[in-house]
Length: 404
Image (cartoon, rainbow, N blue to C red; front, side, top):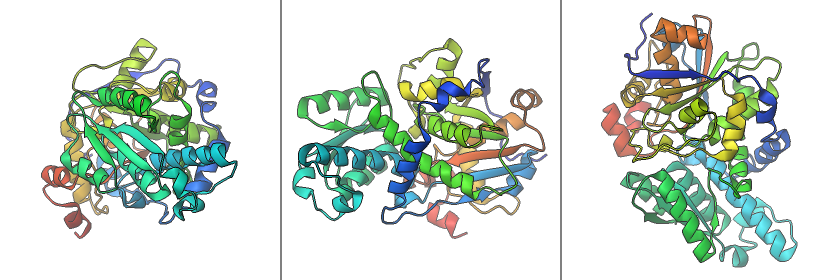
């Protein structure tokens, strides 16, 4: 074995009650996933993102297969978040039009400006680490409403500018991500805006549910892209507030209920609210600045809706360290033993780091049931969403990596 990942701190918590899938599967319905698929696949520019096999990396790590779902090209926004925020925006606008006029508007109507006089007076808002806000801003621009986005102290200027270029007003607040969530909600209440959040809390569930349905488009593509005679034995998904992991695990549990893979949630060790929640058996809060290079995962509070699913469906919760993420970005850019080079952003690689890091340690491998026959599915949830940060870590620009 010539695993390209160096040993870095890695922590695993196996949830004793894992396997009780029924409660998790009922949070999101197959019908809701299908509605989102029909809607999003009709949008201009929709294309399925690639599922990249990495046989060289799998061999080097002593694994049977690694598949990497590369979301870097999603709607030219750089991340899977394009699916969720924009879908929740169009759902909100369609509902608002129905309430005001009785009409059943379509996304095509909105894109064509049929209801612009009405939608122009609607403002959507959200807090973000970068990618979700970019999706909300893009959805607002495409479907004809206005947008205000809140970012916290450590969100990069590059990510701020990307949202401003999509027409959003961007407000930076002191504190961490969860502080920006609270400020966005307070200001929305004062100014009559509609919050489009990817995290849910008491009294606010339906819009985050639509966000999670939007993410299901990505997972549905994976199911159709995998080799017909193979399924993954393990699925590693980034944590954050939990929405994407809950969406992925619920979708796969519904499709593969007879033989589902092992589900593993992975977080930065500086922002592990899901890990802590699993340990204490209820939603936990991680205070402080939550400083991690994996900026899109810097969440200290669990989405309650996501936790309802994850508490039933997740087998293992893991924490990984920043140096492992930076190293993974670099060797994916190089390609291992003939693998296609992949542009992976800082928050895209936590799942891969967890799988490769566990494989370096026989005890961790045994704990997760990893061996030379294991087939690993990971979700590369973003590309170079901040080009300057990416180039600083990798040593080359994303364009140079893609061009060889």
